[in-house]
Length: 251
Image (tube, rainbow, N blue to C red; front, side):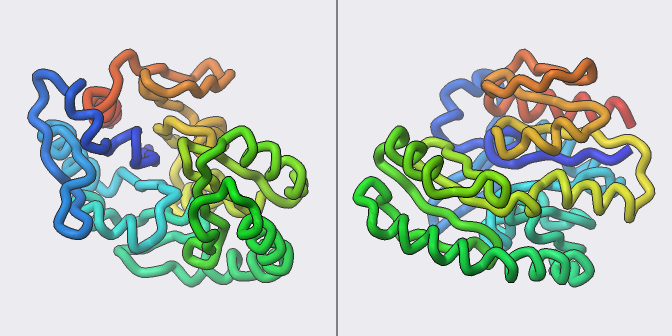
């Protein structure tokens, strides 16, 4: 059995979730420019440490490599997936076996991605200069979600790219780069038979659908139509703790 989990809003939480963490001892696990920005409960950190010790957890995130490396409790994981499946780290170093595959995907889609970025730059409702995250996919921000969605629907070929809007954040990602594909690769490489996956957003949907058991926190709006999906009743930091406890108990 191996456990793969999204990070933000699944296992780790920003400061605005702390008010709902009644009865939990929250601990900062990420600092940026001297400011505390992400938290887990102390019990969740202890449960995570046990999974890391046994080599049973693969963190999976849309974060860049640099952003992932700020989240200290996950840095001793044997494998980690970042860049929405675009990068696999092995003990913190880029796994070249996977990287070479992704470079081929990026290369054949680069002209279209550059065209999409130039188009985004001309739209007044995008408030962040579009950039390529780890040279894998496009990231930007918007102050008008409806106009952003309408524009991306118009300019993106769905047979080649997917887009996701989460709050003000907007992503445009080649379809061949996904959390699911990276997990499929690692599941086969490691010879694991059972895969438990946790996630909360539409960028997690593909890997949750691929899982043998899918875990979804109570604050998520995701609906996975599979009998092996478990909807956690708790939310926020408590959901992260409950997910980790459930996985440890299955070991």
